[in-house]
Image 1 (cartoon, rainbow, N blue to C red):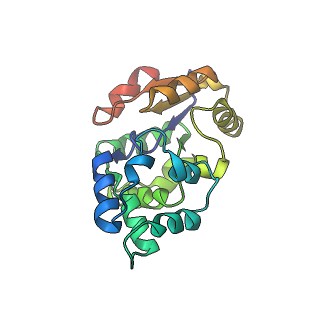
Image 2: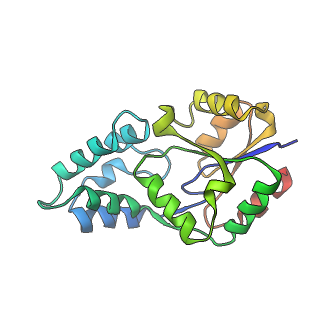
Length: 204
C-alpha cells in the first residue's frame, strides 16, 4: 500500500529541453562549454558539483562568467540556467492538487539553488500551489547526496517516516528508479510528455 508519493522534479513535473539549454548558454553568455557539463539526468563538471552541494551558486556563477562574454552578469547566468526548464503540462496541476488531498507529496531531485527558483516560478505560472502540495522538497544540493545513491533515498525515507515499500517514487531516469528500488521503494519510470496520472494510477 502506498502511503506517500515522491516525484522527481525536472523531467517529471517540469519539462526539460537539452537543446534549449545549450542555446541559452551560447546566446545569453557566449559560453561554449555547456555541452561538456549538461546532461538531462546527471550533470557533470562544475554543474554536477553545484547539484551535489560541493559548490555554492555564487561560485558556480563566477566560474561560468570567467569563460563567458565580457559584460555578462550573474543574472545572465541564472537566465541561461532557466533555459533547461521549458514549462509544465497543465494536466499535472490538478493531479498534484488531488494527490496532496490524499497523500503526503514530496519532491526528490538532483537540483541546485539557481534552477529551483525558476521551477517554483513555473509552478506558480501554471497555478500550482506548490507550497501546499509539497510537504518538502529533498534537493541534492542541500542534502549533499545525489540520486541514484542509496543514501539519499534512505535519508528521505527516514524523514518521510513510512517504510520504503510504502513510498511511491516517480523519476524519468532508469538509474534513479533502480536506485530507489534497491533502497526498497516502490519506483516507477516516467517518460516526459506522457500522461503522469496514467503512469502512477495502478500504484495508488
